[in-house]
Image (cartoon, rainbow, N blue to C red; front, top):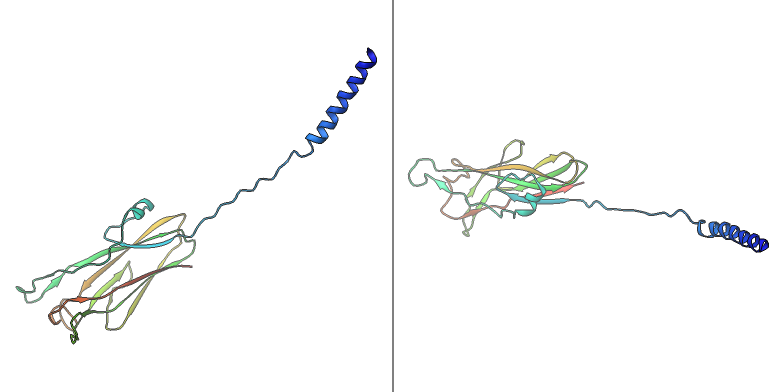
Length: 186
């Protein structure tokens, strides 16, 4: 009986040692984790200054603006309001980016109408620029940001009230112009 106990004890010792070698041989495992941070570069035009991602995501872009002319029939000098808008940029750029606006005078819709209406365009804190009959471009540099954010950039438009290419000197017609905004992230 002692002999059986010794044999069983030896079998158990061998089993424990063998089990440790077999089952404990692979006690480490590599586990890789990954993620991707996508580039954000979206632009919307709006009438309100919005600086949150949720606010940006919930608004739709404004397609344009119709200027009302006041005093046209009653005053010597007709006037228009200065319209204020915001170029809202959703970005996570880590380098300088640019917002570019390209524009020209307003032209009449009627064939043969050569009148134009100029306007002053101001982008952010840049110097106001008067539109001309050829395309003009204004560029604003936007500093890098930390994380995903919305950068609102104010812009204003004021039609020229008097003088050449003004609402006072323009022929009777409907006038329009397109301002093209382009956001470029490096």
